[in-house]
Amino acid sequence: MAISSTGITGRNSDWGSDFFGTLNEMPPEPVNGIGHTLEAMSTLPAFRDARHWVLRNLGISQGSSVIEAGCGNAAALPDILSAVGTEGRVVGIDPTIAFVEGARTRAGQLGAHKARFEVGDIRAIPSADGEFDAAFCDKVLIHAGPPKAALGEMVRITRGGGRVGAIEWLPFFAMSSSQPAALDTFNDIFRKAVYEYFISCNLARHFHASGLQDVVTEAFLAHTANLNAHPFWRAFIVQQMPMFIFAGLIEEAPAQAFLADIEELNAKGEFSVSFIVQAAVGTK
Ligand SMILES: C[S@@+](CC[C@H](N)C(=O)[O-])C[C@H]1O[C@@H](n2cnc3c(N)ncnc32)[C@H](O)[C@@H]1O
Image (cartoon, rainbow, N blue to C red):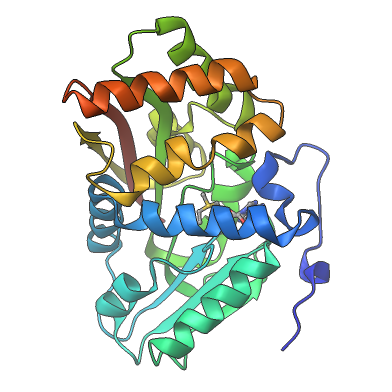
């Protein structure tokens, strides 16, 4: 079935987003590249453990209903199905048409015939009040907001006593480098490019402001001492660099110098990189 983005209504003047809100306007190549990176991110232990922690704390069980707002290509679907079973009601919404198509393909491959994936915006979720036992989002509040609008919608469509969860990360790479200025330039890419850079550190405040109670938070460390230890590290740091250069977020020369330096450190066994992922869950 062809998908259009016309299902998204109700834009408000305070809404904002970064490049993740404009993927429908991009050619397929960079969108596929981002999809590939999301796939790698989903299996990185820190993101995977954060997702498992949220799903464990959402109060869902076999037969429950759950929605992921900003589901991307449904990388979380196998874990959601483990939590609610094939009789559970699984819905995912995302404004990026290519990702919704990918999510539907994944659902078909997994035999998740009752899972539904639709074009939609976290700030205007096309669902009725109290329709779900739980709602969550994963790496979305950093890209689209304000958090009040996004969390407000997730709270609205969750039943009383149901839970809402979010996973976010601070894209600051604590990375070994013999060129600190180049590392600064690299970290500046994300500081400049994302919509709400520090959202991961402020989840509890935003959850309280949205009326959620009994808010609990957890942090997860992503770390490696080898660029090749997991596909995420090269996919995110090395393979995305041409896109960052093309987007004008970093100049070609410092980008290449930065990459050459970390490759050399990595080859000598002198490399390490870390960042922090945070998650929160609260009760309506
Ligand atoms: C970093 S990806 C995360 C995708 C998925 N949650 C995952 O973990 O793989 C961010 C996602 O947010 C989506 N997005 C951007 N603006 C959005 C909005 N206003 N409402 C919902 N999702 C949005 C993008 O299309 C993209 O799929």
